[in-house]
Amino acid sequence: MRIAVVSDIHGNLEALKQVLADIDQSGVDSVVCLGDNIGYGPEPEGVVNLIRKRNIPSVMGNHELAIVDPMYVDRMNPTARRSLLLTQKFISQDTLEYIKSLKTSLVFHESLCVHGCPPDSVTKYLFEVSRTGLEQIFRSIKERISFVGHTHVLEVIQFDGKEITRSRLSEGLFPLQTKHHYIINAGSVGQPRDGDNRAKYVIWDTTSRHVDVRCLAYDIAKTASRILELGFPEYNAQRLW
Image (cartoon, rainbow, N blue to C red; front, side):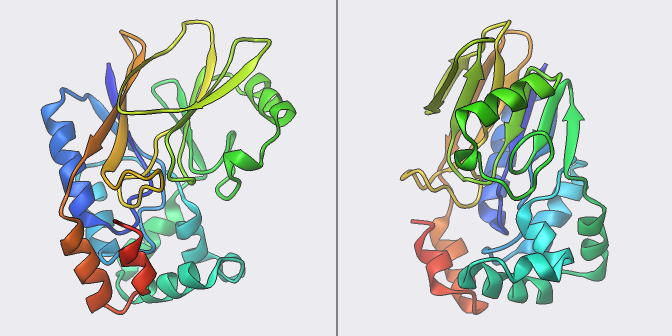
């Protein structure tokens, strides 16, 4: 089975459309989303509608959490906070109810899916977790593979039962060892932060046991222009490049 994992779309409908077109051509059996479908980008309603139309299950990201929890939005940086206040104006009541229904984690084809950090943190970044903390996580969850987002940077953390190694993922295939445990960061569809402005997602092949990192060009100028037209912070457009 081939499973596409997408994350951190952030209202970037142009990037999402390009990714879904690639998914449709890649013989993928299922798709799952790791949250932050909204925030920063100009088309949160369009993104959520497309995810729902395609019946793609999603967990809650911290930007979804901020929409439904005013106490959390106050903890975000000024750019993210301003972006979310605008985002609230561009989503329907139906979309808001959908966001409220999202869970903090889900098990999808024997993998654990969460936005921030396993087992179910929406807000914790992987780089905040010590090696001891990572070992505790690996030993506490039964799934051998966890997929996360949140940092917008592709990464793999693996545990062989004794040692933990972590490394960046790059475009192409990454083999998975049968007896190892993994936390895999799927990067970002709508706002990569790894120095490569292409939309990123991964395909997990459960049969051949590898992860295929996909990197796709899309119409950044169109998204950036729309961000500025709608009054989002200029930085949101600049960082796409």
